[in-house]
Amino acid sequence: QVQVIQSGAEVEKPGASVKVSCRASGYTFSADYRQWDYYIHWIRQAPGQGLEYMGWINPKNGDTKYTQNFQGRVTMTRDTSTSTAYMDLGRLTSDDTAVYYCARMGHVSGTYSQIWGQGMLLTVSS
Amino acid sequence: IVMTQTPLSLSVTPGQPASISCKSSQSLLHTNTKTYLYWYLQRPGQPPHLLIYEVSNRSSGVPDRFSGSGSGTDFTLKISRVEAEDVGTFYCMQALEFPYSFGQGTKLGIK
Image 1 (tube, rainbow over the protein chains, first blue to last red):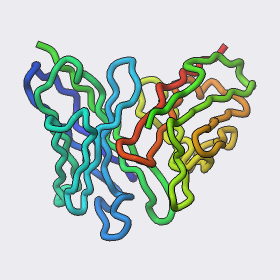
Image 2: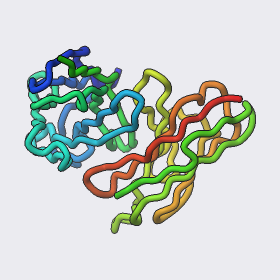
Image 3: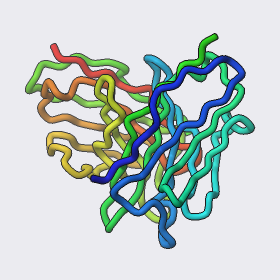
């Protein structure tokens, strides 16, 4: 079954950091051709709010691109040996309380599809 | 790119049609002739689920009562006959330019 599996909920204190994992299962984590179809994207959703795009990582070479709002505070990495992408967010505040999603968006075997993780709830509270 | 959805909420009788508008602050047409506009349904407690990609292409397994149309900056998602399982929030998203951006969401309820 093609899926991305995220780590479980976490509670962190203000000022701390959190590392969220996203493991790909049932498909090739990276590819030489049309690498953008395999990017892992990160999106978050504060309680009762809409969707906010954070950035992407290319699993093939580790290239990243971050939304300006998160520059300097977010780091996206990957481990190709375990087909896992990570999103590290530092200097947490209560505004970072949200569900964090990873997603692959692109063409696989000629068909466009998106695979979203189940989401990871981060609560920032003292 | 700013994405603006209307209405922000609607209540529909089962079996009746529904329509949601999404407008972008600039054209979503790429030089490769594709238009990078997507529609999602997020049911309560679940991640967003892709309904439509590139304006009008239904994702695998999506019922044909969902259809997308539009061009340039104006797009529409139509549900020909609303069903109870359609309850949730619909989002449009542009993927033409980084950062990708979403509309505010349209919450669909059942009368």
